[in-house]
Image (tube, rainbow, N blue to C red; front, side, top):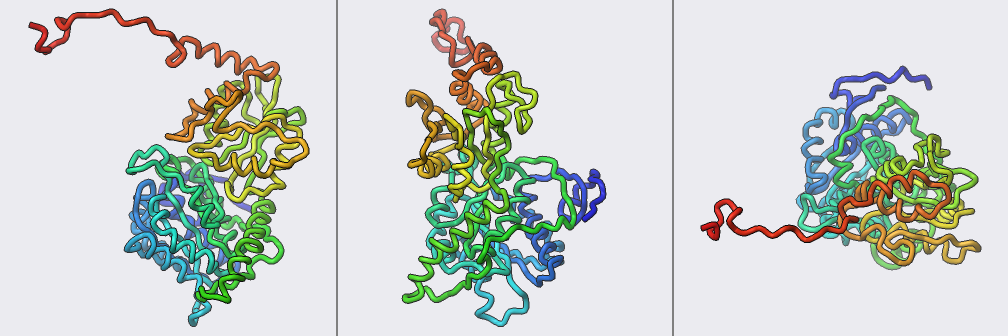
Length: 443
């Protein structure tokens, strides 16, 4: 399909089906996503509707407000938005949309979207567990947008949702910016329809609140490759034996197999940098990927897929995960081939690192895997707080300094000598209270 050249357009174009370049936040991208899905379905000859429900909470606290501002557009695309009384009530309402065949449907399917922050996911765990076991409609699908606040900037606790979502058997997609919210969001719906499972998207504060330019292309003909046997699951509300046993078996075997095959077939996880001489590989996802690429540029490893512009003699391999659960074992084995060391860059507790260790446990030639701990067992990337580009640069530099011919790393380490954290301070000179303005001891 031929497309006209991208042009800059007014801000209102961010929700229209146009070919243009716009400034968009992560929350705005989430608001556009149901509109894109409705347009894609219409272009494919499907008559579908969409339903959105959830409960507000930062970093998705402004999502409901943005949807309300775009009410006319939502109505014109068959998208119904109803805020939930609470998180679990919203999850149950979205799951109800997948049981359309038990009614007298006037549409082919209903795509459901739930939104909430990580503590809301915790609260709604029982509802999600039932919903995912029941499954999703092949012409509908259901996606959970989960807001994570890793540094607790607007939360009473630091938030990370991966382990909870994994326990619920929900595939996890992790976008790094607004453009990837749209890209992975389309896959999230298609993945749910193909597998019969809910899918989820991890949206961290910096993605939800951050803004970036996004190249929008109208009618782009998004057509994912579907694995054999996709779209055959029939959701059911009969959660009693003898139905439960087959449902559980199907979820753990057939439906999860479809998820892994979909992720592979559609290159959701990409090796973005590779050469024949690689001995060290880096695995990362979401905002950690952006921090990693910034760190590598700072350390002199260049920015191209083959390390163009690098000042270092050694090269690195980088795997960017769009889906952080499940990670197909075949992709991990392909990435690890020929490597001596794999460094996993992720915040909070080890999640990606654990999956890689499991996949490579009995591999014939297993590389050393570093992540939460580096060489000699020293702390590398902490399990607390928010991972920053500076922390990633410091961590990678400490592990890459032993590679041959890395003047960029040596230069950066030399520049850090004597900086805060590396400097030895002499005791400060003592002064009497006389010099403290307003101090009662002054007199």
